[in-house]
Length: 50
Image (cartoon, rainbow, N blue to C red; front, side, top):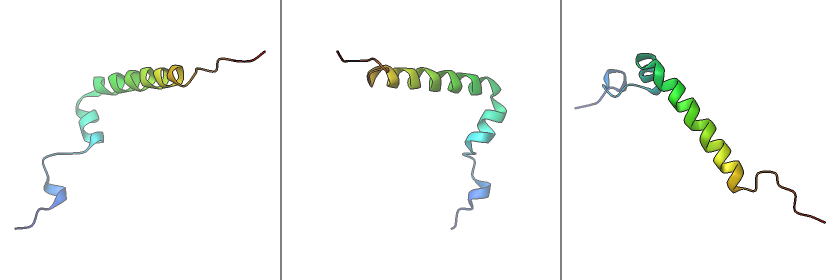
C-alpha cells in the first residue's frame, strides 16, 4: 500500500494559516519576541570599552 502525499490529511503550513488567519499574527508576534530576546542574550549592541 503506497501513500500519496497529495491525499494526506496533514496539510501544509500555508493551508493551516489560510484556515486560521489569526495565527499569522500570533506567529509574527512570537517571531518578533524571540528575535528581540536573542538580541538581548547576545549583548544587544552594548558598548564595552574605555
